[in-house]
Image (cartoon, rainbow, N blue to C red):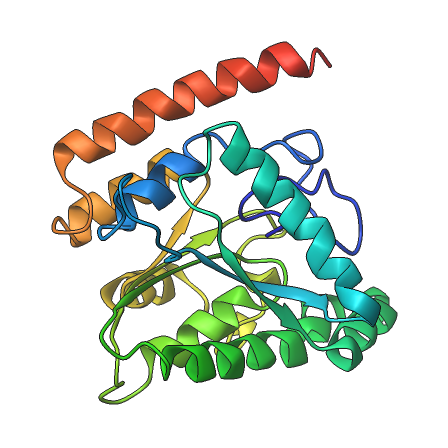
Length: 243
């Protein structure tokens, strides 16, 4: 959720993106989600938007309630097209990551990334008639999860694409991935793109990548809609946050 749907403002342990004020929804993000939810209709209830969170389930759903309050607010404002499902992380993995980040850096999030992959696989088993687009960021194990999904052989439900938001300072060598840092050159990024894992710095960039590689998921008209909505979202955020 943090640094994928909205900015963390660099507040640890939520995330590391300081480009936007905390809790600003990324321009164009919700527009892209709405377009990718191809089965959604304003006249029928649906819940095809699912968030995998590193935040653990704790006493009386405290962390989940925090997220759902934000989701309900976005739906009530007409910005989020559907109330999503939230799949929480595990307390042990989250605590380990928080305690070891100072010395292990992004490697501290390996258990979180692997747990996200296992959670996704279990959830996918309930909806084999669907295919999926995975959206995440490069700060807390999402790329690792996407790589595991992309390397599956004959998955029961296909991963159409993975969109990884680049928020981590330090470039590709700093990201948690299956491949060693010394091998993450330009060819590495091209290989990820061939497996339909795309890095982006904005959701307009994500839409451009989808249009170029998966035109059935993002038409030219839909790409234009994401870009126009991103401009409006940015202007709204700028008016609310003068700093």
